[in-house]
Image (cartoon, rainbow, N blue to C red):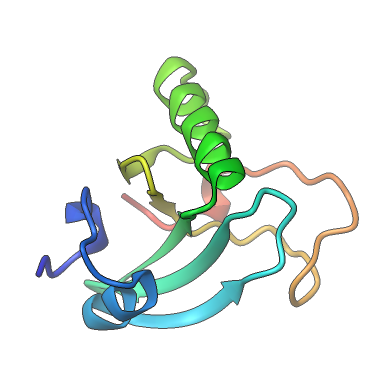
Length: 116
């Protein structure tokens, strides 16, 4: 089992079992239109944003995000640190939204994100 989420390319167990084995899950976003579940995870001394799905709609969403992230480089867009067909891992960014939901558009600045 890897000791950091950036080593995650293939997860062979339940995603939450895996996440708890590599760190502390401090946030979970379960009810998403994308059919993905997202997590905030503290692992290897850093906070990470992990997005996962086993649902066809969610898998398509993850593929689009992965493709966009590999094709577009912009300082305001957090870089994927790891990715596969079922999950993506990027730096955790704090954007000042309410507890579990953002009702407004926000601009993610590099200073809002965990260092790489």
